[in-house]
Length: 248
Ligand SMILES: [Zn+2]
Image (cartoon, rainbow, N blue to C red):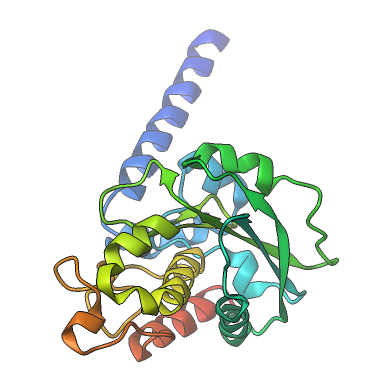
């Protein structure tokens, strides 16, 4: 066999492995592959990037296995008056589930235009955010609105360490129940952080990872209920299971 043939065979094997892993990774979060091999691959930043793993069900090991402080750096449009209590409550919960100190810092203003998610890199990479040695950053982007955003979506994860919130989507969702904005901002922050630490969606309205923040497009308050402000028991159990898997 010539060297050329051997190289070609190796290339084909690599491509085959890549396609196999990619197809498996795009399957259901409950599939055997996504519950096992994906989880192991997801611990490696290079594999995460190449296979585009970071999605529902991928724990970012850094948040759950690190020990240094987590800096929650937030950005917001100047015209918005974000209630700091929301961020402080969020920090308490981040501390509760990671066991790491969590501190909140204001990091700068966001544009008042609809923000393109891909443009958040310039913030994410900003050197203005000081991270302690051994620490991690968690970036919170309060936007008036962001794009791309599917109808009904209130918030999303951005990359490995970002959470993006659409304030206008929250307001239009809440309608007459605008007084509950802070409660929904907290549940949205916690929902997206849940994705970052590897939780998947569920359909229990008393749980943070419920795919739909309300019932039939209306907030829970319209039905005499209220949006959860902490992970529910099944989610707490899942977090503990993820920590065990990560060897923490
Ligand atoms: Zn979600």
